[in-house]
Length: 77
Image (tube, rainbow, N blue to C red; front, side, top):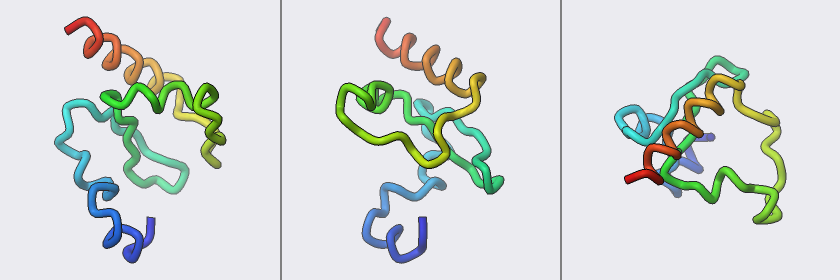
C-alpha cells in the first residue's frame, strides 16, 4: 500500500496489526509483513461474498491453519 493510500485509510497500515492479538503475521512475496485478521470471519468466505481472489492467491498453508485455529478459538468464547 502506498503512502498516499495509507493516509486516506490509516487503519489499513500493517504496522497497526503488529500488536493485534487476532492477527496472524507472515511475510508476503516481497518479504513484507502481512496479516490475516482472524476476528473478521467474513474474510474467510470470500467466494460467498462474490469477492475476487487476491493477486497473491493464498497465504501459505501454515498461516491459513494458524488463522483457522485462531478463528476457532474466537468462536468458542
